[in-house]
Amino acid sequence: MKMQLTPEERQSGKLDPEKLAIAVEQVKANGYIVLDKVYGDEQMAELRGSFDPLFDEYIERRGYNTGTNRAQMHLPFQAPFNDPSILEHPIAMAIIDGVLGPYSKISYFASDTPMPGSDYQAVHCDINPLFPELSVPLPPFSLVLNIPLVDTTEENGPLEVWPGGTHLHGDRANQDTLGGVVNPHMHIVRASQYMHSEKVYMSAGSIVIRDIRMWHRGTPNRSDYRRTNIALIYNRDWYGSGYSIQIPRETYDALPKRSQQLLRAEKVGYPVMMPWEW
Image (cartoon, rainbow, N blue to C red; front, side):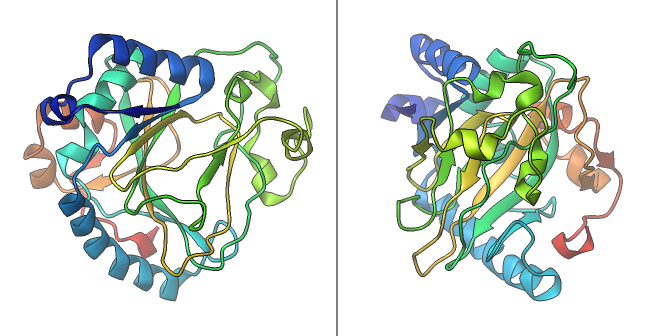
């Protein structure tokens, strides 16, 4: 579902209460919500200007890692990427708090970029099941937030998602399908061919919030420019994702209290780690 913001909501950073309730319900029941055009064009241009040379150097040093002409790249915890408006946008946090509760934490600070010539990914989810022996759906415990730096269209490889309950399949959700391994509980790559999917079209500066268990895949970028998403993961307090964001002490101390709370479990007091150092 795509939700349009009013000028007043965009300026105040606060959704109408009914719209907020709908957004939380959509993440819980349908797996995701799109908030169209939350950020301004100037901020997206600044992010692109800082991201593109970093990404070019990363590819030169490390190459592609999530498929043909496609790469995941961790972001350095520095301006302009670590702006509080990215870490704790009030509209996004209202939805995240409504799904995960008020004590979530950021555990992933990165990006996804399909370049021209990228191909389809296999259908997958981004996490293995917490309890693979169970077949009952668990409440949400981890959410992915994406911010596209360019308009996302049919031409430049939109994210394709399988809404309506794929995030509630319990032991049937398994991330290893991306590497070509067949899920032992359900052949989700095959099953997805006969299920409803949606391509996520949106403006640069939108926000996507989705349950990390939701089935999805990248599609081919047939344009002549990269399509980059900023990607953050917010977890319930008790869940960790295996990554650590390095944050200099002076940088952490200068952040607002909410950002500090969100980053409380990360490696504070360490130098910034550049993408190719992971």
